[in-house]
Image 1: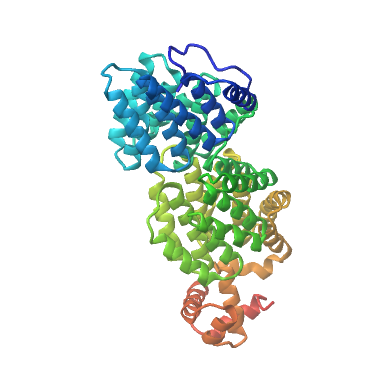
Image 2: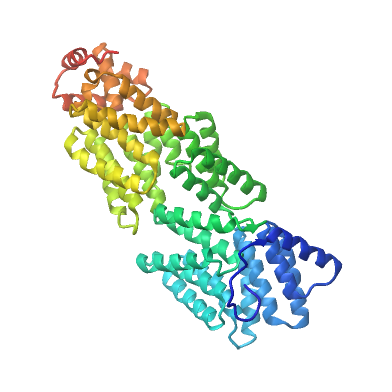
Length: 546
């Protein structure tokens, strides 16, 4: 909340918030500050990363204003206290201070800019309870008060709140337009840094919920440039730190992403800020993709301890360890639990990979079908790419080779357009397998070489090992791909050829006998065989015994 009076100018191009905090703190030690100056000191303390001290300072300002009968100033201080407490997820205390601010303002019937600010947490509470219509109405009222008093901070905060409420109401186009407009005010330096931080974190969170990763990346880059001019500012807090790490990972800057994720987790734990689980999960995903199993295990455990579900990442880690049954049981359980938006999309996308690895094409198709229904999320090229990748993988696994080419090419084009090289390289691997199965060995090698370059650059050891194995195995030894067998089905087929029973195969592979029976049924169906002897003959004929 800015000082009283209209705001017509911009914030300075450069500012040192640590220095301002230290100077005001020194003045506070020398003399008794007025409530307005205490407010500035409290804001500077917050921007410099001293949240607890900020609460103490605003509490002092509130008490001094009450003693002097300055009702509006006391309400302003109460708002700031609730603001900092909300950021610390101390919602009950925050609600108490909001109630006090509202009561103080109700004692004076005249409309004022403070009335608009007090509406913000109330509208946020409505949105949190699912009352998006009520939230949109209250945010709109606050925006009108901000315009009336020429308070750009209030206008911008209320505008982004309206945007998110409209997205919640299904009016995504209108909502996203308001979010973009709010971010323009932020990156142009038209609002104060404290408003900038709130708007940025809210908009980035909304972008991730809508799977609009392109927009999240562009606004993060823009705000990072602006933050560089604000010395001493702590701009990224809470989940914003973790989201920043994830954006770096998606853009292929894995070393930077790993550093940022570690920093985010350490910073959030030390400061006891929210978002620790999100940061731990981001760290775990990087470790998993790099093949650092023990570190990934620990990071997923930390994510769970901090209240963030470790799935689908942990299930995919189990799959990478060859624990297919464990992975499948976990993903089936997670799929039965409520989830929405990006979290649901990630779970379904991971489920497709796990189901295909266990030879259950029907379950994989069901997951793809649900992903398709999620495509109604607006502005989400990301979700379109996920769906196309998954659909192509299912076609490939079920011998529908020519049908696989269309969705895989579509997915590759979208991933590249979104500038997410790892995901694009994973599609290159699938395209290479499809090309080889169709007899196009040159096409397969080109796809795999492209993928290998990316995996090698990023340090994605498991993915690199997979693609190097594909390139080093002769086409004749992988002819089974043309018949649609999965890697696990090939393992089962080899053991059948060695005369092993289903029970023995289950013991050797660490899976259930029921799963082995399903694999055997799939093998017979795909190869058009009816006996184990015929299956053994196929394995020997196609040189699958090594």
